Length: 212
Image 1 (cartoon, rainbow, N blue to C red):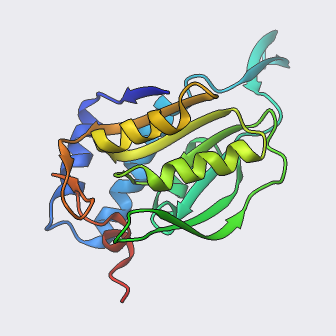
Image 2: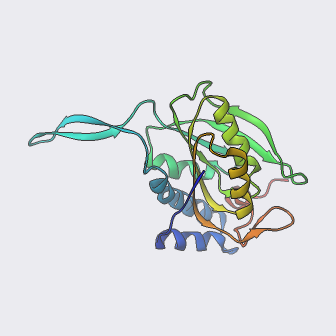
Image 3: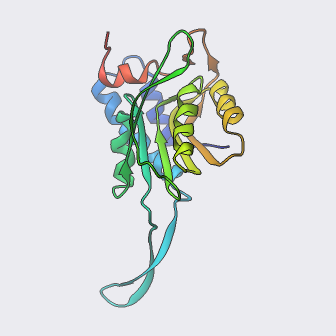
């Protein structure tokens, strides 16, 4: 597993506004999209490409285009949906799969309730998007789902990560495949409820409101 913390002033600025408890949901959603687009730029540095011959208005030249099969973007429901627009803005030709996992607030284990993924992901570059890497349970379960379908090149894009979650992913995944985590920051620790500290609260609630 590789970790890439995107160190850029614009990323730090947008993340600070997201953390602020006074930031309302509409602004939170907008900044999340903007921040994810910046993170996606970092996450796609090693996206597969092929050479392509094209004609410019004045000459013929060799350019670069994305390779087949197309990349797959996998938002983790529901909070990952708030990151989808920012990711597909940079990768408009990518396909989108959905994976629904919910964290058990007592055991912190991930419970799967929805799955809309291709059966065969062999040779596909997969980009998992989920705002918070806290305990790591949800992300590990998501990566395992992709592995079961043949994926071996997975990039996980998160707004924030906790050291405990990073260790959990490393312990679970090891060197079985090429997994990279791209995040805006690695925070200090998790509290007793499994929330990232200082964090930004519950990303899903701040994006879409509280659902009882």
